[in-house]
Image: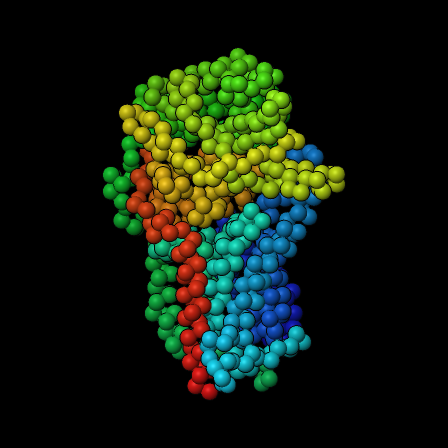
Length: 576
């Protein structure tokens, strides 16, 4: 046992690389979140005892490389559905992306270590009110931190606060990639309903780390002493009591089955808006194959036909049809679609609808220059009534780099790089979140739209000046294999809870779902199944605190955690 512990201590970065990979199994579809907590606890324990800020960053970065390589493995699957680049390049792209994303946990680790060991002047110090930073060294040592300088409450607060900030930065820098925030681990718990409406996704990630740190400090209430070669008690009875009296019961209650939780009233559950969500189950490899456009439309049509006379919202996935529905394009762009015109295509769609129905379908809209030359496209959703009139469009604003456009095209295109979506032209972004106010059955229905991975960006999914009745998230999860789609669903549920709005997902291959404003999946279609969901639209809640103030709340929460961590250290130093 002594040799094993010594080996692990002397190879911390390598161990954390593996631990980071294991930690990613806590996300869907595996949901082995206790392993994630153990791995995060190990990360915090070793970062707290790091011999320098550089070492702390390296430990956090190594953990992040493993974490993001395994968690984002679905990206490699997307490369199997294109022919412009070799498939094996996808398995290079995943770890290369992880090398960058790992910077954020690395910065969080460094920030927590620096706040703990190199306090700023306002904490107070031994001389002139200015504290003296601890002497650092980059030389590894099996037990570099002095007694009492390891994992403690101030460091736990610092780490949680810094993680909130860096997770938010990961969603913003270089267009952002906020996939799999830590809070997604606990989307099925009561904690999500308690905290997401207040501190949002990033704040809840910090809370998860805070509780994990307390558990790490309390559960191993004996510590291994490398000098003596044995275990010694730490005497952290206050922390142990906190865990026993607060955290453990809350964790237990968090996993009570939904069937045992009092349900909302019928008035809350139904807004008397009928939905038909269609999942045609056309794989990405077949989507653009010759002849499959007809098969795809047939499956869409078969699953869209009305079963009664009640007006419905018919919801189709992202890029559901290859037709041009708007008038005014050059004739060549209408060839091979019904009637070889926009009107002919719209007429074909109206045959699936009853009077009063509305159809929201994914299409590509085209952009031309003044010479009528095609210069770009937009990934759009078009709303159309039963007479064939277009009521509005939404253009995707948060495009996928290297998926919908080739960043640094001037450099990468000569090297053979291409975007994953077929075609040579880049998609153009839309203006941002927008609500379509649509006439429906003698009233208005306000539909917020977020196409595909736009839904993962916390605080960026709703038009604040025109709050919708629900968020429609059409997506093409066929790209993402067995891991990506369940993770997508989990993040859509986070948006529902923090915004207090139902979320409806329509995908070509699954997982399509109706999610209420509490994040519960009311109805769904699994992956690999063609079918439809007929459901009533759940009612929205009143705007949550997070819906009103957005990511200012998790940033304020991060500042509060860091401030609480500074207080005991300031008192300790002024007392010297």
